[in-house]
Length: 280
Image (tube, rainbow, N blue to C red; front, side, top):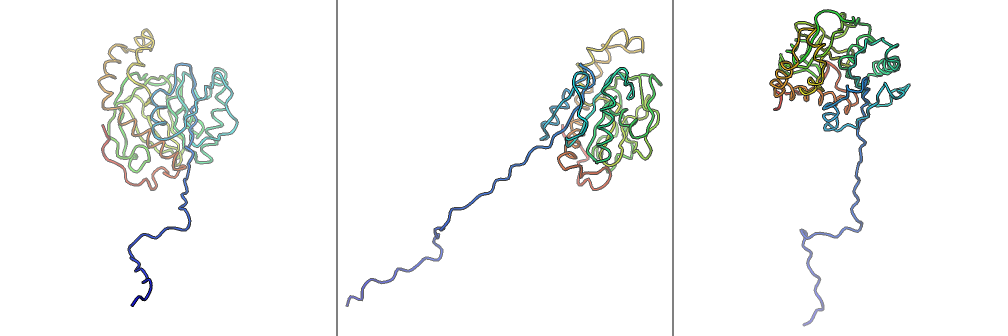
């Protein structure tokens, strides 16, 4: 007997068509921006710009000697490069007051700062330290920099080798650190090679951005008057670069991370896991 069509069984494992199309949300993040202040025509950021860009930052370079600096810092991080001036030589470098003002704002707002050579001296000056012109013995070329025990837990220096070559080129120096600054590194001729003010502001006397070939542009006669031979300085720096470059790139990449994290990697507070060795 024909009982009509039988109901079809349903396979519970079979896929069920969705009544509505799936919707996907794509989050677009804007890279954090770092402002670099350049103080001389020849003193550009060099490989520092590449390292910061590779770390995911947008880099803006303002040349203080040919443009007006902003009254307010609207970037997420600040870098101040070197130059042949004292940090208060406003008659020779009339953009320095604006630079100091930006550094002061960054310190108040805990915006990450990296000062190099003059930039480090300017950070020390703004924070209450003392910078003295043509003091002590000049430093030039690749020089052993000794990291102090205070580097332990520091967001930039923690776990780096205890001694690293760094290129020096200065006659002026910090002679007194700001109150409560953390002293991070030293050399035989110049004690204050690296320091931190507050949670995320670092000053350096040496030049992590410079490579050995930059030495070939230095004034031969001036170096000789200070007791240095340019050819030998260059040869030493070339030999040291395979050791120094990965270390300073790691340091700069960590600085970029403090910017990307909104200044969250504060000084000696929670820096998380850090490598004890530096990649080659």
